[in-house]
Length: 168
Image (cartoon, rainbow, N blue to C red):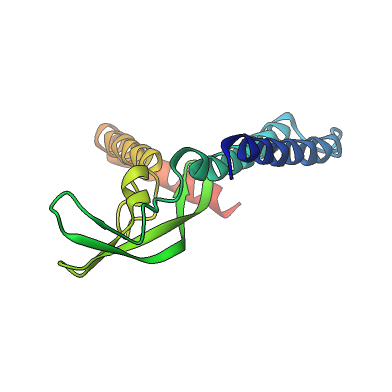
């Protein structure tokens, strides 16, 4: 499939999602819903558009990582395609993303790998995108900084408040 056709399909799908979400937004009861609820509703919709755009962009930008039934890697070791259309999912900042990729077997080492995982920086056995790993690490640093700078009695109170909010 050529890029123009893929772009047209993705554009059509995004347009359809936006239309559905605008219809959903128009059905909100503004007498019952607060502005905060409206804002959160829109944020959720925008996140769904981002998820769809990211998921559809992967094959457009990166293909599926298939370079033939056999090839030699940088160490001149033979690699064989064992799965042409293997589904892979990972969690991104937009939500769960699924894409298809080719999987290869290094016949010398006996290890399997995907060229797509390398291109997308999706680590083996780690099902998160690079951006999500970055933000997760940032969040941990912020939590640690808060923990180290707040006196213990205030930190305990903060934990109780958070736990109460989570129950609601």
